[in-house]
Length: 293
Image (cartoon, rainbow, N blue to C red; front, side, top):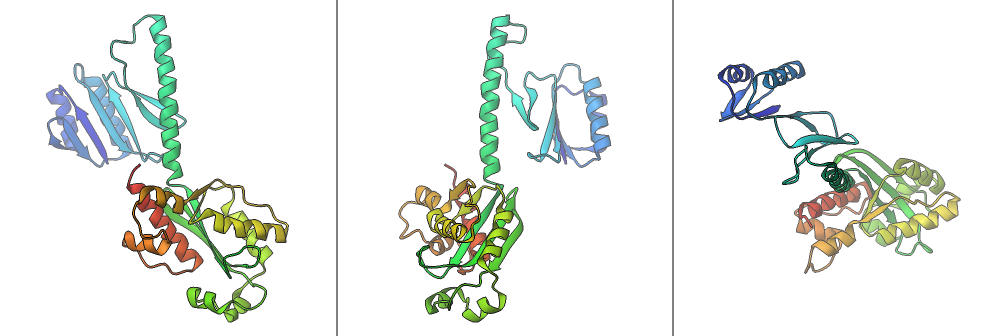
């Protein structure tokens, strides 16, 4: 889809635009055309629009999902590492000002672009990450074991891949854990794999991704202990604690269990299985960020 806005549009140009687009308001045209037609329309706008201004916004396969053109505008498109931004002119600082003012304008531009880049990086951090959840045989990483690994990879806000593996723990699964998770000793014996194999695959899956946990210290405590036992590297990925974020954004909750937040946001009940809890954590994370600062 493309959107074109034009001021002081001559009749001949209006005729060209209305052949391909729908004029939904004065000087505002919307429609779906091929890239070839889009470029031809923009060429005609630039050729025939003498006194007015024009903008064209259209879908593009980039991080923003869009691109745009401007014509006869003091607002100038600039590119920052593939991110398209608009440079707004400073009042009283036209392009033909003195060299000193021009230098100050460049300094302002660099600050502006850095701020925009930081904002874009924060935006991408909200959309690209891997959610991690572990099921364990208890609460103490020194005494208990990882029972199940779960990880869900998210790109541009969508789940694209997942890793799930039962661990062949030493000894029987405690009855209380069986009741909570539904994971039995027989399941572990039949489907479980050695801890070192599971951990190695898990580390490969998360690579250098930003990780989301619901209560970072709990899961990381078990991962650190397991890494020591298996002589594998401890994950050093940047981490986000959704529990900490929830405490910051939601005041007055009776508690901050994942199940309580799921109920608060009208999401599915917590299953106490690794992949299901990863997906629930991701959904809570999205809801929390929809609340703004």
